[in-house]
Amino acid sequence: MFKKVLISDDLGSINQGVLTVLGSLSITNIKQVQYCDDAYLKIKKASLDGVPFDLVVTDLSFVADHREQTYNSGEDLVKALKKDYPEIKIIVYSVEDRLQKVRTLVNTYQANAYVCKGRRGLIELNKAITTVYNNEQYVSPQVQQALSPKTNLEIDDYDIELIRLLSTGLSQGQIATHLKAQNLLPNSVSSLEKRLNKLRIQFKARNAIHLVTIVKDLGLF
Image (spheres, rainbow, N blue to C red):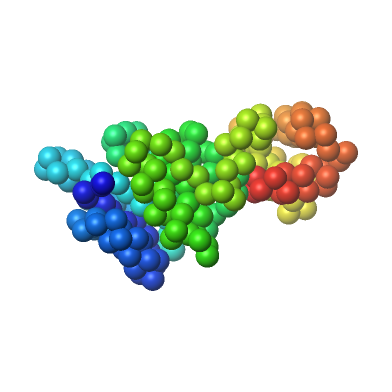
């Protein structure tokens, strides 16, 4: 079983639950942090000292405060750790259940497990730790659809943001202005029209409202 574990979560009550699960698995060498930057620095120092962490359990959402951070979310942390320390095992433990988010973290950033917080969250976390220790992937049942070939749609984070902006009632012109302000490409009205038409065809949507509804129902945003 894992010998050295880091918990990254800004809520102490959540940490206590995770500590209980780790204790039930006879894991005693546990460190806790409430900032993603602290998590990265502890992992870096442990690696340099020759006593690396075996496992990281991290939330995705961290409340911003006066302290400026390099890594503002668990997603940022997972991406950085898997790039710099690919051997470390990472379990995401979050209330977030959007399929696109799960797909990105597991398929793109290579998180080893994704566990949804909830009534069975700690039970699933226990199972995830054992599964990951055995070099297998674990995803909570309610979001397993994210990794199914049937939901392997040609849609990326840009498309999700585009549809999200559309759902707020913005016109294509207003969306183009917003994207330009964020330095996101493509951001011309003609490009947005082509992108939305492609998405409507892909999802078999009758119009923009129907497209937003379908994408929401799939849990993509």
